[in-house]
Each structure stands twice: as C-alpha cells, then as structure tokens.
Image (cartoon, rainbow, N blue to C red):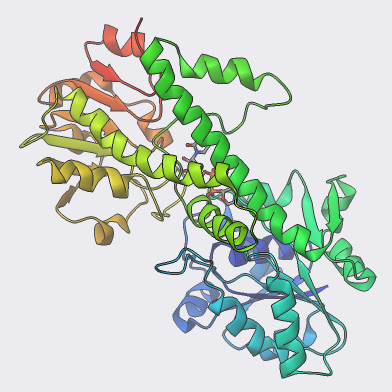
Length: 435
Ligand code: UDX
C-alpha cells in the first residue's frame, strides 16, 4: 500500500517508519525543509531508541521517503495519515486543532481515487466530522473516508508499542476503509493483535479515555504513597498487592513525582473541556489534574524537608530532567516545576540529564553538568527526578565523598531504603516510610 504521513514529529515519524517496515511504501511529509533535509541525510530529530536504524534500513530498502511537498505522495496514497501536533491551546486547555485543519486543507485538493484519510493525532470527539466537511468543501468530488486511528505509543518504547500493540483501534464503519486499514495492519493481524472497529466518535474518545484512565491510575498510587508515608506502609508492596489482582493490573502503579509528558497533561485537560461542554463533566479526571499539579510542588517541599526545612543557600544536585527516561522530551516534566520551586526558596541548583538538552532553554539559573558525579560535587542534597538506567548503579561511595552531606531524595524509588541507610545516606523516597 502507499501511505502519505503528514507530520514528522514523534508520532508521524515512528508510525511512518514502522509502516514502511511492514512493507508499505511511505512518504513522510513536513513543511519544515530543514527537518526533511536532515531526515534525507539520515539525521533523526528526536531521541527514540531504535528509530535511527529503522529509518535507515527502510530508506535503504526504498520503502521510506521524505518530502516537503505533499502533492505527489497524496495522489498516490491509499491512506493519508494526519500525524501533526495537537498541543494545548494557550489559555483554555482545549486541543489546538489548527495544524490538523491546515494539513487537511492542504491535502484535500490532491487526493485521487478512493483514499482513506486517517487521524493519528489525538483529536477531540467530533473532529473527524469537521475534517470530512473540510475535504468536501475544498474538493467536492473527492472519494474519501475519514477514519480515526489513535496511537498508543509510549516515548522510549514507541517502536515496540507500534509493532506489538495490545490492540489497534480503527474508527470507521465504512467497509472500503476497513479493508484498507486491515491491509495496512496486516502483519499485526497475522499476529492476532485485536483490531477493534468502532464508530469514529467512539474511537476518538477511546484515546482520551485510555490516557485519562492511566493518568488517574498513576495519581491514585501517588496519593496512596502519601498515605503510606503517613501511616508507615510501603507503597511498592501495596502496588504489588493490588496489582496482582487481574482486575487492577500491575502496570502504571509506580509512585513518583507526578505524571508529565506530551500526552497525559494535555489530553486530560482537553477531555475535561470536552466533557464539560457536553454537559457530562468528569469529576474524577478534573481531580486527577488538580492532584497531579499540586504533587509537583509537594515534591519540592519534600526536598526542603530532607534538608531540615531550609534550602536557602544550599546546593541541590538534580539527576534527570526529562519527564521520563529514554526520551529527550521536556514537555510538562516534573523537573520544570520542582526546580523553580526550590530556586524560589533560595536553592542553587546543578543538574544533569543524558538527553534533556532542551532544559537549558527552559530553566534559568541552573548550572548544567556533564555527568552525575559533577552534580554530586559540593551538593547538600541529591535529588533523582527521572529514573534513567545510568542512575540505577551509581558509585555511591564516590557520590558520598563528593557531596557536602550524604542526603539523597529518590523521587523514583530506584534505591532501597535499608541499603541506603546502611551506606550512611539520609535517604528519602516515595511512600516507603521507615517504621
Ligand atoms: C503516554 C501513553 O502511555 C501512551 O499510550 C500515549 O499514546 C501517549 O502518552 P508517554 O507520555 O510517552 O505515553 O509516557 P508514559 O510511559 O505513559 O508515562 C507518562 C508519565 O507518567 C511519565 O511522566 C511517567 O514518569 C509517569 N508514570 C508512568 C508514573 O509516574 N508512574 C507509572 O507507573 C507510569
């Protein structure tokens, strides 16, 4: 099949490369000429494990192309995917659909023969109807079916998630479109991946419902962690104890500094807006958003407490700035709230992240270091915000000698309290109170 993928951001690039790897002919299109030029010469604009190799292999095999002009690829395409961003609209939190609509306006005039126009971007319920209306207006003769096909890719594990998904959701009742989508996902079909055909609106909502549920699940265990600290229980054992119940499930029960990233924060807020507008408010999701926001500030207070209540003039060493490991994405990272809160109270902050280079433009007054040991040097407290693998096996004796005082705040529970205390650290973690 021929695929045109509009948008070479995170979702578009991963999806395009994976469809090419399935054997389809894919052209990834982006208005950003610099980005396309870079991709054409083997450069990958984001950090995602395995992506560089996958792109290179498929370019070499003659199945993956990059272009700034959509016309040729769209004319040839059986399916045109819209994979552009839908950021939070400034001020009100609604999903900003201007990039989606601009992409649709552009491709509408080019479609030839029966073409499936697929929304991969996360869009509020009813957006498919609007896309259909735009295409009809721009090109009344176009023979198109507009389909919703949400992505469920986790950054850092996106290729695996694309190739071995728990399910594929396809929102269309059009049989011709269903046949095209089935053919596109045929390798997964052979693997017996459940492919769920629903109405378009249902599919659009499934994406938001999934992300909001996961955000809620994380927030639930985070609150439970606070209770564990208050009553002397261990949140990791609570998570295991409840997670083994098949009705609850063990995943997404790691307590931490609050969820961040490109999806959960913006999608929960957009869903809240949709639900209010529809007269069916989602109180649980609204509370999740509020509790998660508050949590980031609470994490700064936790650090201050570990320092005996005063951080003024103290040096805080921070390990990990991205919203999670194996990504360079800084969007809504807890570090962006925790660090300024500490600085406001007079702390000096020195930090290191293996890939979060963008942090330099987002945080002011931070002394960026080149490795964890430089961060530890002279620090009054070391705070682990993101659980990069390289922080899991630090030379703790060396860290202890470098620090002004051996105080460690582990917001991801990657070390063991007993072990750390035995090594002479004043150790604070999440939801694991000493009893
Ligand atoms: C998420 C969804 O998982 C994915 O299906 C969707 O398509 C996009 O949004 P992503 O944002 O890449 O993916 O990361 P994810 O692994 O879900 O983590 C999101 C946030 O939750 C991170 O800040 C992470 O640290 C936090 N988290 C996750 C926890 O605090 N505890 C957990 O148990 C899991």
